[in-house]
Image (cartoon, rainbow, N blue to C red; front, side, top):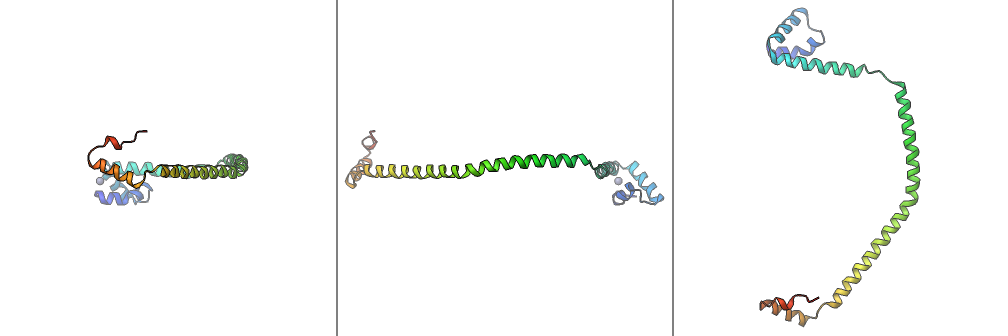
Length: 142
Ligand SMILES: [Zn+2]
């Protein structure tokens, strides 16, 4: 038996479904081939893991505990949602208030800056100063 045949027969071998001659051939190959032997050990471990998973017994008290936990959670959620239901409109109102007044404030400061803007002649003067390399005179004095 070569490695490919061994790996093709591995699951049947582990399930005990091979005929005695094939079973013996398989055991001989696994005894002589470290690669297939390692593979068979991993496969056997995986199968046992699945078998243990399948045979885990159902715990009737687990369901009761889960239900109790869920009902506690849902009661807490109801309290929370009642509180949130009252607070949410208030919070939204406060947020809208803050946003509107921030906007008004920004708008006013923009108007204020615009009123401080120098006229066109003054701008030309500063531009010509910059062109002549006299940067100090155009720097803000405030
Ligand atoms: Zn092999």
